[in-house]
Amino acid sequence: MGPIYEKTATSPVNIAVIKYWGKRDSVLILPTNSSLSVTLSQENLQSKTTIRASPDFKKDRLWLNGVEEADVTKNKRLQNCLRETRRLRKEYEKKLCEEVGAENTIPLSEYNVHICSENNFPTAAGLASSASGFACLVYTLAQLYELPVSDTELSKIARQGSGSACRSLFGGFVAWEMGSQDDGSDSQAIQVAPKDHWPELEALICVVSDAKKGTSSTEGMQNTVATSPLIQHRIKHVVPERMKSMTEAILKRDFRKFAEITMRDSNQFHAVCLDTFPPIFYLNDVSRAIIRVITEYNSSNESGELKAAYTFDAGPNAVIYAPRENIPEIINIIAKYFPGDIDNGNEYFTDPYHLFSGN
Ligand code: PMV
Image (cartoon, rainbow, N blue to C red; front, side, top):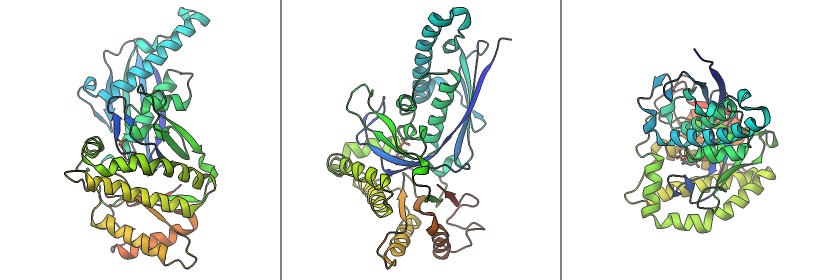
């Protein structure tokens, strides 16, 4: 038996406030617009990955939530992430060989790996599990290989697993700059502000349904870009300005501006889904009821300040961003309008995953 090298790491989920929707290159995963997200730091919303490398392993193997994938060579996106991290390790080994000699350099890039990854939240619940999963895969490989590269550099690899994964390499507020190069060398994630820049901001997640989404994001984006005239307007005339305003709102901790852009961007994302032909519906009646409730809650505020912002990804589940002081009130309102005690679960909120609160 030869030696086994092992590393374990965890990665968080991120929820976009300016949505990524559309690819200009579907192999390198280059987006048609920049995007911006908040990384959620709840410990109950993470992917955890352990990777082992050994000269004795006969092939690369992957276990997802305890179930082994039949043939990892068919998982193209995983292959891309493995190939790119191995390439960087190879370069690093060359350097190590020059510095410390070949006898002191472990040829990890040549060993097969066993990857074991799990989410501590329901994978089927549409809670951005691919983002945390691929970010965790790339980060754990980078740790195992001791790669001397920045998280932004790693984000370009995670992007090739799942676009939104590039943003989960950072905590806090994170932008994915779309870049302009055809080789993807400038399509990367950067941190706009760390988590402790705005500690009062919290995210409340309402799991409306844990059913698997009908249209995958890959298929949905492709159809939207191919058929929607509205997406072209969004890409050219809406998102560039929004990225600037959102960055400003975050840097100034301006919740009014943050909330308005967040809700407008979620609305426009679902509008381009409806503008896709045939249309894509991710929201359901409960999602729309949540939009009404939050809109009403905001407009009942005498000071005119916004108190909460909703956003929805490619599924019916709501994420509500709000200053911490408003969270108890919001939970009460949700409980009131969606009957059945939220503590006991009900037809709308899947117990026990109905609400995650925290920033
Ligand atoms: O990274 P993907 O392919 O799972 O796409 C994510 C798309 C949205 O979640 C809808 C938006 C986003 O920016 O996260």
